[in-house]
Amino acid sequence: MTRFFRRLNRYVPKASIIFYMIGILAAAVYLICVCSPAFADFINVHISSFFRALNAHLTGWIPFSLAEFLLIGSPILLVCAVVLTTRRAMRGRRYFIRCVTGLLSVVVLIASMFVFTFGAGYRVPTIDRKLGIPREKVSAEELAATMEIVIERLNALVPQVIYVEEVGSIRPYSHEDTVRLCLESYAELSEEYPFIQKLNAPVKQIMLSEYMTYTHISGVYTFFTGEANLNTNYPYFVNVYTTAHEMAHQRGIARENEANFLAYLVCIHSDDPYMQYAGYLNMYEYLASPLYSASPSLYSKTTGNLNHYARYDLQCYSEFFEKYRDNTAADVSNAVNNTYLVLQGTEGSKSYGMVVDLAVEYHLNED
Image (cartoon, rainbow, N blue to C red; front, side, top):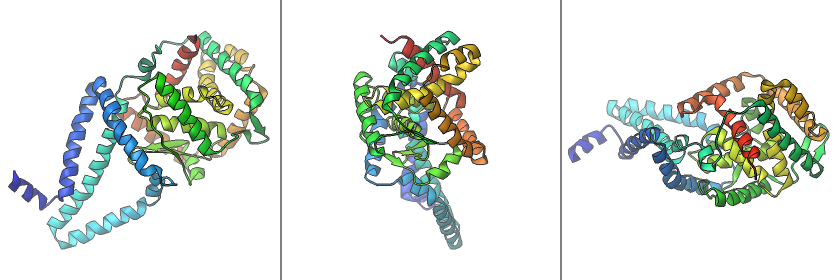
C-alpha cells in the first residue's frame, strides 16, 4: 500500500489524494442521503450544521461578501490556472498530470463541501412534516379565505408603515437592524421548532446588486463561504423577506419553497410591524396568481379589499422591476436555477407552489 501511494504521488499531489478520498466519502454519503431521508436529516442536523456554522463564523468578520469577491476575481484565477498548467506541461508529462489532478481535486473538494454543508438538506423529510402542517389539496374557496386573512392583517399594519411617492414603503431602520430582528425571530421559532439551527451570523450586502437584479436573483447563499448574501437593489419589503429567506438557507433549509415559507413565519412572528408587513405583502403576491387562476371572480372580490397604500407599494415594485423584466441574463439564470433544483430532487421552479399550500393550511387552522 505504501508503495502504491508513493507511485500515485508521482502524478497526484499529497493534498490532492486527501481531497479525492474526501470526495469518495462525500459521494457515498450523498448516495445514502438520496436513499434515506432519515439519514439525510441526521447529516443535516448533526454534521452539516457544524460546518455551516464554522464557515459562517470564519467569514462573518469580513465586512464584504467573500463569495462576491471570489466571483469578481474568478477570471484572474482562471488565467492563473491556465498559465500554471501550461508551465507545468512544458516541464514534462508527469508535471502536467500532477497539475491537472491537483486542480481537479480542488473541484472535488468544493463538491464535497456542498454535500457536507448543504446538499443533504435537499433530501431530508419535507418541512410540512417538521412543522406539523399537513399539505393538502387547496380549493379556490380556501385560497380566498387565506387571502382575506392576509389582506386583513396587511391593512391593519398599513398605518404603521411609511410610504414615499414613486418608491413605496420604506424600511425604518438599517440592514443591520433587519438582521438583528430576523435573528430574534429565528431564536424564538427555534424554541418551538428544534430543527431550526441556532446561528448568529450576518447577511452580506452585495456591491454589484444593480447588475445582479438583471438575473432576477434577490439573494443567494454560498455554501463554500457560509455567507447569506443580499441584493440590496430590490424594494425594502423584498429585502426584508429575502434576508429572512437566505438566513433559512444558512440554517440548512435547502429547498427554495421551504426557505420561502420559513422566511414568512420569521417575518410575521416578529414584533416589528415592518417585518410583519413584508411577510404578509410577499405572501399576498404568492397567493394572488393561484387565486386568479382558480377563480377570477373570487380574486376580484377578495383583492379589492386591499388597502390602497399596500396596492401602491406593489405598483411601485412593478414599475421598478420593468427595467429588469426581460433580458438574456434572467433567462439564463432561471434555466440554471431550474436545472439545479431538479438535480437536487425538487420539482424545479414549480416547487415554489408549496408556499401557498402551507400558508393555507397554516392560517385556516390557526387557533
